Image (tube, rainbow, N blue to C red; front, side, top):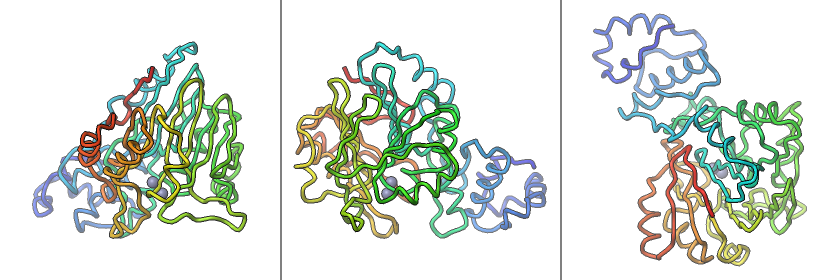
Length: 348
Ligand SMILES: [Zn+2]
Ligand SMILES: [Zn+2]
């Protein structure tokens, strides 16, 4: 199975002059189910072949054929990133924050790690590859979940796969025995089904409730994605998290729009807000989020000491640049930091 990524940078009409293309075309496994069609089809084929060859590897060359631009490479990745995470000594009482892409963050404080909404697989790209809504990955995966050890607590703010990903959580639980997952009450039964036999302890949380897990105090906050959805008991399907540990207060919003009562439910002057900026665009046919201006304004309304944007640069159909966010923060005088995937922020 020979794949030459250069092929995808050639216009289709020139492929017939390219000897490898013939080989490539004739050696497609039948399970790909596609032939030489649109450029999108080329990409879908690449994706399937990449997964067949190495299911654990992210799709390095995916978008080349679509936009002729390279995939974003995380600033630190795999072993180098792992080394950095594990080398922070247990007695270090500063808050270390790594962005793992989309809404995924790893917090480390005094040797204890909390993993927020990790998506470290290609499950959505695979799920939607054959549809009219392909989830074309823009940034390479920074870490495989089956090497990320020393994790005791992980969150899932809601059921969408970019926040609750069985293909991330199951391998993660195999290298972290006793792993606990904090998630909204109404999604627990669906979560159990998706996680199958894995031994993850599920801890339900609602807006207004608080639990303490391994020294991390985690309080739920109502999220509107796009509306505030509750089960018969009144529990929210989508939540955000206010996290307290040591002297630090962090707000991770999950996916949410601005809603009445949001500002009042958040602490003043928290150390760090982690907020989505991809906005709410109905044409994308997915539930939306705060845009860059709204995230800047939310942070400012709560007098946050620092705000970091997230939920962009993962899927081509559902992204923005951080420009609007940066402009709004500058206009409002709101302190911010734009992180790179795999990047580290240290808060004193
Ligand atoms: Zn969502
Ligand atoms: Zn999302």
